[in-house]
Length: 136
Image (cartoon, rainbow, N blue to C red):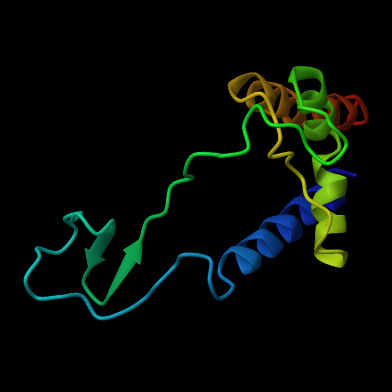
């Protein structure tokens, strides 16, 4: 069982890596400028390493925070926990149907984010308990 779980986790990580390296995801490889020192971040949010440069993109502000979604609901902590728990399923579904999203942008901000991370942590906790109890 541990071997199968390891294979599933490795396959999931590989899929995420492939998806994150798709065109338009913010990763850019090009020849560095000779004007900036190698490895020094410059104001353009690029890190130049000999041979290529990496563009760093951090998440920006969510303009839909505290606004109701199509059903008139603003997602809160409990909905965030639920979305975190079902996130592995919605991740797989999002590869099949691009209209399925893991994360609700119509949320109440940091409380929803905390709930989402708690839900994801619960998934890993439950998987760890199940995996640990089968070893004995």
